[in-house]
Image 1 (cartoon, one colour):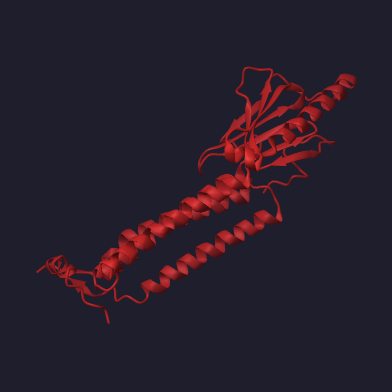
Image 2 (spheres, chains in turn cyan, purple):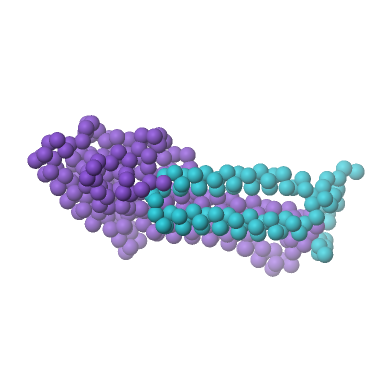
Length: 88
Length: 203
């Protein structure tokens, strides 16, 4: 029977993450190039970096807890949804 | 970055008199939107808990849900950042020589225009609505002699004061230039505009 590993799910997520990273750097670029020089602008950039860092760290820390090599068969997914068991 | 003391194309004795951003209520709206969007997954989780469904317990659907949540958070984060950048880069600068209008629309559309104070014919301030009246913010329109569209200072704090200040600066500028015609800047036919062309006016 056909089965697929869990890490296939990381491919679409990786695309979303890359897009978010691109937007993040576009925002930094715009601030760096067009904003008025001031302490507030420097603080804003710092907040951007810290918040993106924290979000990435939170997501990364979760991703590390999952065994992405585990394989699943499509047939076992939908029926088992109702009788979900706890991941120990 | 742009330094207020050294504006692009500035004249020797040019001094910044007014520096404006949109009112803080616009920033609050951005944070409110983000907060509401962040409540959506919390609400979904709470509803699932009420139905005694543990969304993250299943060995397959748990990680799927977590990745969807992570993607959702990244999208909300990106939208919020872009909106804040948009807010931060919308600025209006009035010097003793000119008015500079710099507006950011999203990440890929930027409009920078400037008009010499001598060209200004009419200044209008507008405050409408309960919140605008209560928090004293609104729009200021600066109309030039040409047929170009008028400048709009969007949602600035104390629009009446801004209008009065610009009016005074216009009067002073016109009087100065009447007595000293050499001071008049070249190319006063129409306001200059650069759309998405940062090399013209680097703002």
